[in-house]
Figure 1 (cartoon, rainbow, N blue to C red):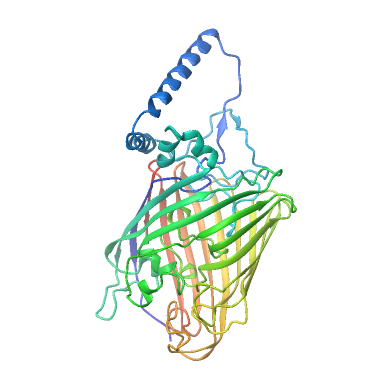
Figure 2: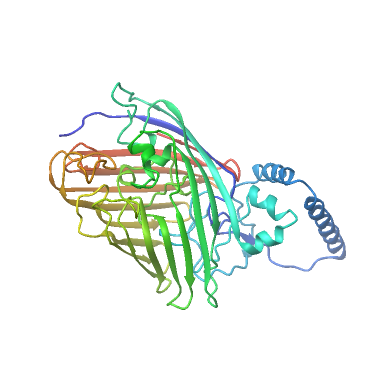
Length: 481
């Protein structure tokens, strides 16, 4: 069966950042001017400036927290997202012990090559303070907050779409299978997110360090992050369009003595592969591809990332399966392996990230698809780069209707019993059009061979273009077609 329907969707998404968006907030190309001798007048002016700054810091120490937060918000709303290097500048000092990040972030969502399930080994993991943390740092216990390295941050992400599709008496989901823009012709609160996080310092090599993240998400997007048995009644029993989830709850342990460093992550993580990211500031576009919407999402277990050299990184882990809580009875809840390998070119122009993301017997379960996956990212220059991802997924002995063991399938049931497989490929190409904006083109193809992911045994193609624009440090606006 082939679906001949076509949908034109126009969306406008806004992300308002309340804390740090990601670890690459400071532009990777930040520079400082070359040192030179100062005149006496310049030295005197500099001393006065430093005295005034010290007085301002002392004054803020005695301001109420909400006043400091308001002032920090107003200050950063007027701060550009990206500051270009000064002419003739030399690189600012850094403790980073790996090659410089290949991308400026912002405007791009990440500065480093794609890798999931780990912080960047070799990077100090320093977050630039956004309004909430700036208000805390400038308060009476500011130094203690800085020493703890614990940060609170988050964002609000909302969007609206105009679509040629419409709701029906049977379903509101007129834009399906574009699941993140599920309901046509309406405004949505996609996600309100709060992180509590500590990043380990993985640039140093003389001691073991630790970190953690606990995430809280509320909004429409919970429908695409939950696992069976993990807040799943909101959708599987009540079909709530807005709900709550904790997509990441984990502990990091960094051990510098194994090769060039090993990170051990224990807990609930977002599955390691994928160009795209669920959390709004880390995604290349506001919308998502079909490929991302129908592959594994969350896993619970122990995951290791080992940096062998500047070119090679190996990941291996064991989990309880995909998208099923460790306490939930389900055929897919079983010991499951993960092996991924990343190679980056010595000239920092290419990255290849491939592996077997789900390794078990492939028995038909809630979301127990096996997945072979790979991504190739190529940087043409500082203004253009492209990323291509492909996967092949399958399950054995699929059943075309609900059963006692699998009463709910994550998307839809296949149209016939037996071996269920699907494959997909997507390409993103980004063009930087301004210091604080880039243009993206996305093209993809997906073949749901027996309808195990969408309920229709058919082929799909999806095409999109959009702009990501940072009017200032805290706001991102992303119109798309």
